[in-house]
Length: 454
Image 1 (cartoon, rainbow, N blue to C red):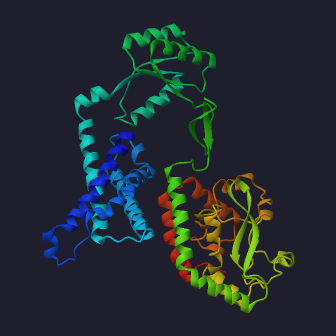
Image 2: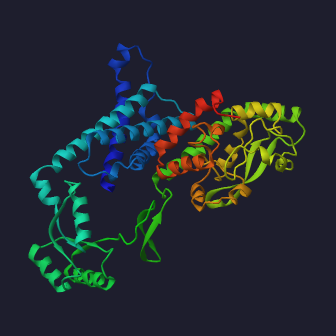
Image 3: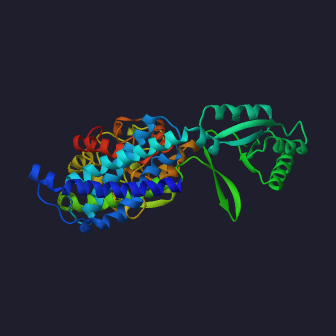
């Protein structure tokens, strides 16, 4: 995979040079009467962004984890998204460093990098299909385990025709001694064994591994020890020992790093461009209603850790003290408190809530690392303590966010807390950078038109 990443990094660098050369071509400049561009040396610094960013966004799309000969349409779609995000990263870098480059250079960079990497992938696919490549790539394995387990593994392998694995035999640890396995290794000159372990005794597994160690044969242990419902299993290292990790939340990855970059740069950008309007809102709140400009409250953050959330105050200053008087008016099922036409909300507060302007100070929480631009909405600590279903706490396994699937699915029109949680868990289980960007884009019209706000 690292070789592919290095090749693609070089392709992204070449694509930028080609896009610049194409735009700077004298014939093209003269024919279209385009203004001249600055020398290429002015843009060499962009390679510090392009070279690491290109492979990083492709890896975030799962581009390097696909089968060698996967569906062409899937390859093109993943590559299209990756090149699009790389182009977006180039635009953001130019904006942050206040540098300018001809817009056609940026557009051609995305198109040329897409075409060049696609050509590379097609050439690799054609090479891999040759008999010589197949003979060099394919490895002989023996399936070891119970009949049921080996049948399951064999079925999975058939689904990946070009996986590079050839099964030359099967062996049951429960029926035959390990010595028979050694004879099978010699007979077929195998590369390794695939060992399934759900219903096999551990001492037999250890004996098989020791035999393969002496033979210099690889052992692939399918550690399918427990049936999980939603957790994904991965292998890590703890104090020098391999460990199985069962994780039902998104794991740390390049996509997580990209998400943090988007959070930081996005929050900073929004605070800068909305600075003056936010000051005007703060002044109006101070003039129209006695009390502080900002509302502060303890909310449950990542893994339930409390943090102080910031919002523009939209209620009277003693709103929390009189909340219990409105308990009978709560329209939301579960622990969440929601009231249409809440009498505690000020006239200005209704307007701020309708267009979600009261949420903008939470950009400070994003900069502090307590929140993300996209994620489940953070609930007050006292409401989180009232969860009567422990499964609801899984929404706390990721950072809370400014917007989420609930935000773009009707907001206050949703009165069933279980539906709210279902949308949050759907987001967690299907999370990707592309999903975050989709939610951010779909949030814009919701905020502009005040859809679902009460």
